[in-house]
Length: 535
Image (cartoon, rainbow, N blue to C red; front, side):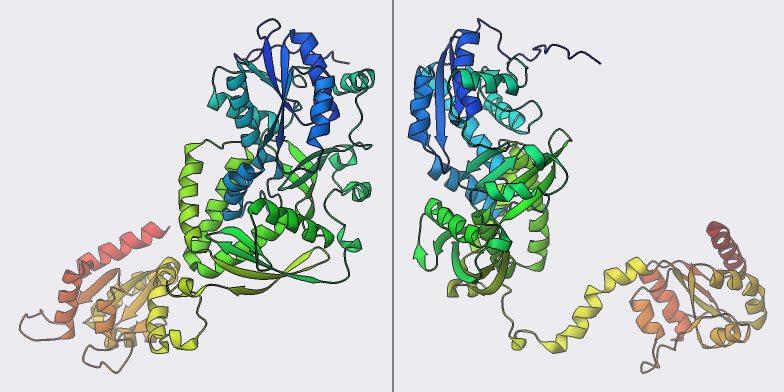
């Protein structure tokens, strides 16, 4: 059995013993982060400043603060960041319809930039030279938090006890008993909770199936099969893409999300088993409780789709995915994310209105969308009135809109044939037979078409210019630039005075820069070259 190699600190921001005298700890009140307080203090001989950040989680922060003090923290700071989290982070996720890999509304990734920012602010204010966290060695969070800390303060040192293997989880559990730290959950699962939802990992969740035991340990959601037997209608109102009211009651965003967590949780909304591609390339597995976020993003997406054009909706979907991926990877300060947000904010200027939804046993059904009069006055594409479309113009629209498809699917080249003398027709016959069997569409004037037909060669009859009532007409096809090559070999020498189809062909070929062949020698040479090119 291979021996586990000792971890070696190689990054310039990693801390060695004796280098720091004051450490800021991102503290949650959990068993593990509680153990870190006395462990960091003893290992690094430093003062510990524990920072508790209120992101709307259902936990007793005052109790956690008292516990941190008992465990030896020199100072315990509680930062109420619910409003900032809602206004500066959650609103952007709503406007971007954030849904990582089709399922995950970013409960954890969305909060990490704010946690890192607050940790840096506290460290700088308190004169601490290092920040510690309790992220595991294979987690996404270590990348998100540490990259943002270093972005905001490149000189800041970072301590990650679980990664550098100085403190194992089993050792932490022993220390928890030694320090008489209460177990926050009598379960094998680990919970990460904030206003936007709850992420649950660990235990049998790590297997590639939905564990039944988790249903007994959910925080926000009643499983759909046990949810209320009575459906509930709700109305969510948005102003420029931001939720502002629920069931006709104006609410601040924090209160609104809390209420939707309660309502949605009662109906089993937003419960999912997620298998995701992690930043390191591993497959992450978690149970997500996201009732409020699921309702808001579903409602926002429907309203946005309703007031936007087809092209906007298609492009917005791509932009939303890119924003979500950048957020998931912790690239909150990547310049591109700011560029994307400028576009998203502009699109959301018109995303105002009321969305009525029906909630029932894990399902969300869209019932209606109502947009204000001033939105309709902007002539957005929301009208279903038949009179809004001039049906007489539809044929032209179809012809123009289908042109790219016609051109893309015209794999064959088009050749117009107008050969006068019969002996010339027979002379070209072998090559024309080969052309018809290859990717060439042959068009022919009346007598040439008649000859080809008797020889069993398929061609399209082109009617004379003056016979405008007969289609296809030579004049129309020349104006449409239908031909890639014209072979026009008249019976007699052409004149410039007599207005004939031959003269019209020569004029339009020159005008539209279509290759024109007028001699037998040249015709044989070109057709032979084209035939060889197809082999």
